[in-house]
Image (cartoon, rainbow, N blue to C red; front, side):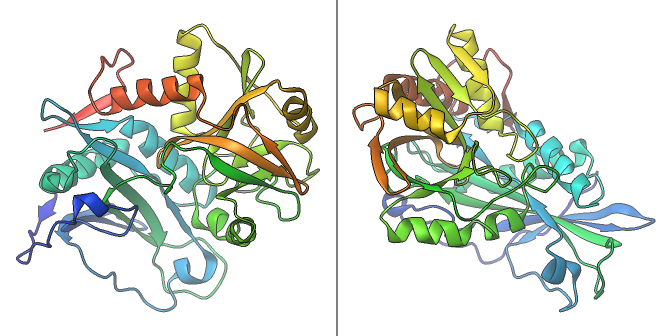
Length: 354
């Protein structure tokens, strides 16, 4: 693939690394690739970071035809730039796109564009522990057409953002509000894909939780409001007794790449890790009888986010001793050591950017 590169003539000032938040600062360049029906993906280019000009009738504005991914690049201690399981993100982007009739973007094209962009803006990758370069690939429908139908044109784009911790609490446990009013997804819907509509639909519940002093929402299934789905923007796991439980992939939750990585680590360590449907009543019983030892969210943005408290129907339940659990800490340390190149990657998860 030929990528036309136009470098910025006005480089941005780098952020204050001591005050780096999440998703507010963007690098000098962006990748764009266009799609036109009958011509395929074409015109791959890296250009200075800038506004995107679209027709007001573009399908993305009216029918929400867009999908996206979230991933990171890391500055290893030996100077290498590492990506974590990027091909899995490329494949999941296509899986999401298939649900919305977005044409498949070849994985090789995704990877070449990604590596070229990250290499060009490598000076933006933080060198400090627990900071990284967040990568946002996304595809959106561009055909100007008012009518619910498949678009004939799309744009794929990647932007980059140096980031600190996703949650202000960092690795300190967060408080979670169990949502039994709003619904996030149902089987047969779009809950298993990464599209903006899923997140827009979660905002009201998240706002409600924050009004009560909670960081995120624990979602229940949309059909019966009985089974646990996921927490906020992450998959969720519970340590109940000597077993780690996580909701099974039934078509309503995102097949998280971090989730899969954590399950792989746990099983390699000989920890019993089970994927199945988990009822809210089961969680409630474990919290009451002291069997709920740990709970944590897992996802690209936060990696591991320990949960210290649940609000279930107005009642507060502390998880373990309210602090980060031993297993949560071990998972976080082991996974981030692989991601940052501080430990051997025996799984072949990391990919170097030259």
